[in-house]
Length: 217
Image (cartoon, rainbow, N blue to C red; front, side, top):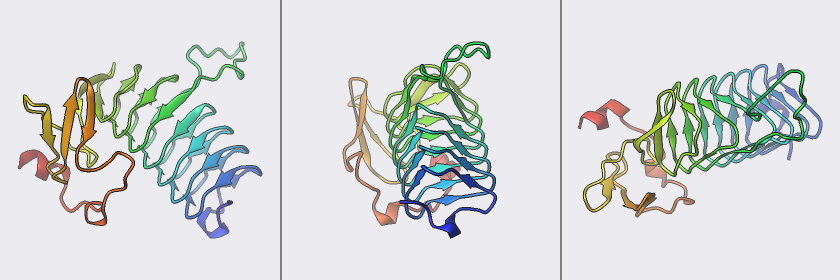
């Protein structure tokens, strides 16, 4: 289904053959290429480019100055921060065409990629992982993983509400905002109280206090 005319800013270019879901908003100076697929209820900020064969799920928020190249798949509920960078060729050269060799990058449901972070191609970012601002990610990231720095390193785990999880000796942790319990078994994290595919209940889908409140409480 194509986006309605009032949800695409007049300065944006949407090529014939692009697919855009209902309720998606496309702002100033965006370019959506033919063959791009964008789901429902997404928001694409100023100067976003979505290439042919890039795939974006539902309820994805893409901030200003982000380019999604062919080979990139973004699942539902992902947040891509301002000016974050995604690539699709490991060893680009102007003199060597590698258009048939684009590498696949998968950003799984609920992940956050912070402002100015760089994600090298051919990686998978796990469900609800959190990539800090400016991080350079060169390895796969596990579900709920928190990656910071350059080079990016796994520094812990984040809840679905975006708070660090402090696991006890039983592998249990509580999100300070939602109160949901998380369990670590081996290297795998799961939410005990809500399945990863389930939406947040309405009362937990709007934040009421900032990050520092919960960090300091």
